[in-house]
Image 1: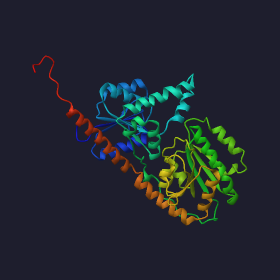
Image 2 (image 1 turned 180 degrees about the vertical axis):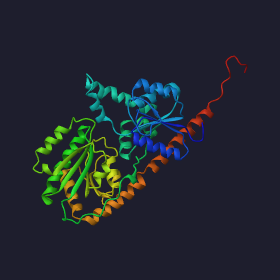
Image 3 (image 1 turned 90 degrees about the vertical axis):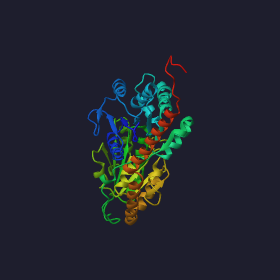
Image 4 (image 1 turned 120 degrees about the horizontal axis):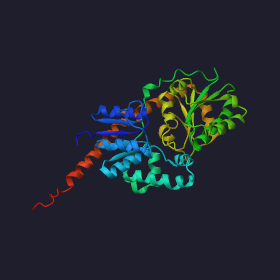
Length: 383
């Protein structure tokens, strides 16, 4: 094995795979990215299905693999380890329970998939991984509690983002000079996310009471529209319904953030939001934020320094939002410090350095194991 192990990144979100591969290559690591055909930054196109994935793995030769996707990629790597002894790192991006419930709907007996099949597959993946990387300390604590047998293999590496993609916020408008614009970016793929959207809608009641022209734009990312009708029905029942606009799958979130005076975010206490990317992007854009003290949100937002972290309650969200809307200077200070915090703690360079150390540790461990195995005499040789 070379001084820098050869890394195979086996499926993941294309932008993140490409960025992480670039950071590792800058540090001298040979890296190959396997992803769906047409995905940016892909070196080897592979369809994300068991057959093609296993065939491609059998033909590959890497010292260590990495995936951040469950089921097909991670199970393929678990089988690859059993058959060929190739170590892999599993990036656990969430608690998965909401994913189990959502995917189980496709089964004839959903409860079998949710309670038996998917949890068993997750245990298999965790058992086979050389390291289990969590994207927040919140997630690591939860996974350690749920899977204590694998706790020694767990660590936290924060996800990185491209801070330069987001221009710093412009000078704030004076308080009361114009109707403020609030922005929220969130996914609507699971029930907990839909509940959080309704919380933000409720928070706009007190805000429009003080600022009649205030507007909240919710940029919803969704793979399907299952929860959208319920959210829109909840909005339609509010007297301030015209103050809330919903934009689905906005292609350039940075442009939307540039129009905002303040960023709002909420997530349910049992949410899969281990490290909400929307909060990272909002702070990279130099926006002050108000968010709930749930899931991984408090690890991103420093309360009273880069924004406010409040209980999971619409009134608490509205109170702190009103405080900041009435204090432009504080919004500017929070925004500047938030952008600096993200650039320091959540950069691609920092993430790349952490993974580089991780891969070197795995390579060193394999080398020590190889040296510890005594050589065996050939069959039939004399002792």
